[in-house]
Every structure is written in structure tokens, then in C-alpha cells.
Image (cartoon, rainbow, N blue to C red; front, top):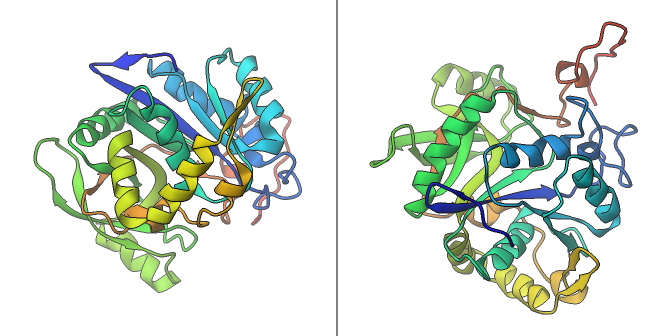
Length: 304
């Protein structure tokens, strides 16, 4: 994997491009999920996500994706001149914890203390300057051993998202806070209280951590994930430009998100409140609120 440093630390974007395409069906579907569509700009959501790391001067990205999408993803990367990515194929879907563990194992082969920036391929972030500022803080906190996520300030009492409750400020980096609690998707009345309180934030799903710290936390709180994914990684094969994980071993990994696996259990979690003006398509979002506006376009407003 090629090296590209921001400051003195290698920062590797890790893009998780899984999913079944069910949230925006029928436009998005298993064979062509929403991250491969041009829903928020003239580029696909995957392309926009990958280019965020390119613009920041970070290392070439690691893409973890469904093996059925490998050629589509490789072609979309070539279209935006990203030709040095590592594309790792999930033989079966096992959620974000096994996926990011596989990426961490790949990166630690050459850079054990590299900082990983984990993000979903379908994140829509509008404020690039705010993201840069938040990432600067996140990398500093990650270098100190924290598992960092970004909290999006809620704009309405949304019941379709999980929330993070902000705790006390952490020493060393301004604007970084301990996480007091993770809250599941709330009832309407509870969501309204969260909005009024001011200490609750939408869970962005993006994380920043050192690769070695992630693996240590996984060994502590989700050892079966590490055991199964390590076995799959050790038996990996290279197929053209793709890294194929062993199917039998990877299938033994628990189907679990990083939130449940470690984020809600670790003692080193942190949150950075950030107004990124972003949103996740699906989960009850209206497509027209994120789609690029054209003078001749017609929009249908409704729930997907």
C-alpha cells in the first residue's frame, strides 16, 4: 500500500460499501445499490466519498465491498482517477465490525499505528471545510488512543437514527468529548427531548482510530470477530486487483456493527460534534432533500 502522510501520521480512508440496496428500492437494489448511483451530485456517492480522502492528501483508500460489485466499483474508481485503492471483497455480508477488522489487518501489515478513517460509501457531506477541521481533531485524538466518532447536530426529532450523548470534554484536544451514552432509535417524544437538550447528536457512522487500537479493542470486546476475520485474512487470495477473503472463515464471523462490537463498550470512545451538513440516504429520508437541483427536474416527495 502506498504511503501518503498528513503531518507525521499515515491516514488511510476505509470505505465500507456493503448493503443490499433495499432502502431506496427500486432505484437502488442488490445488484446496483445506492452508493453506486449519482444521487447527490454528478458523481456516484462512492466516488464522492473516496474523493474526500484524495482531496485531503491521505493515503490510497481501502474499499471493503460485496464481491458482486467488484467490477462496478473498480470502474467507478477509475472514472475519478483513483487507481491505487486496495479493494477487499467480502464473500458474505457480516456488517461493519468484521469489515473494518479486515481492513485494519491489511493496513497493519505495513503501518500498525496508521490512523484509519472509516466511513460508509453512501455518506453525503456538504461542508468540506468543517470536515477538515473535525478530522484534524479526530486524528489528534486517535493518535492518543481514542476511538473517535462524529456527532451530527440534530435538526429535527428524528426517530430513524441512533443518538450519541456527549459527556465531559477530554484534555489535550479542544472540541473532543467523552461519550456518555449511545441511544437507540428513540420514540418521537424521546427524540423531541433529545433535540431540546442539546447534548445529543446523530450518530454519523464515521469513525477514526489507530489500526492497532481498533484491533486491541476488538480482541477485548469482540474476540470472535477478530478470530474469524484473521483466519479469513490469512487465507486470502489475490484475484486480479482484488483481495479475496476466505469465505468459510469469514462466514464464521458474527454479523455485528462496530457500534455494538466495541463503540458502546470501549472505555476510550470520544465524540466530536460537527456540523457537516450531511445525511444518510434511506432510513426514511426524502430523496429530493439531497438530490442535485436541475431546472427541468421533477421531484416526488415521500418516504422511501
